[in-house]
Image (tube, rainbow, N blue to C red):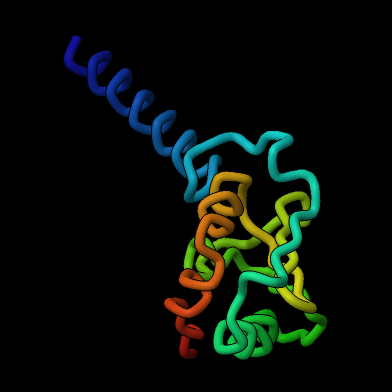
Length: 118
């Protein structure tokens, strides 16, 4: 009987672990709200725009696309279906929730981000 309870507990933990990590940092399923390309150009300060080249280079390719999720401090891969345009750059986010949070204060979020050191 104890073995059965341990198995159920382990199964529940495994399921919770899978659900948490499969949804990304935002904890929400991707939905259509982030599928359109959003553009933020006028509301971002020159100081924030100056940080974008370093963020662009994080994946080893300078292509004006930030492929790592800035909403997760570059710890997750971004997805093409969750883009935001900032200046001449496109930022990919891991899910629509991250993109939406980032969009609420793009300038402040960009200014607060640091380029991860290797």
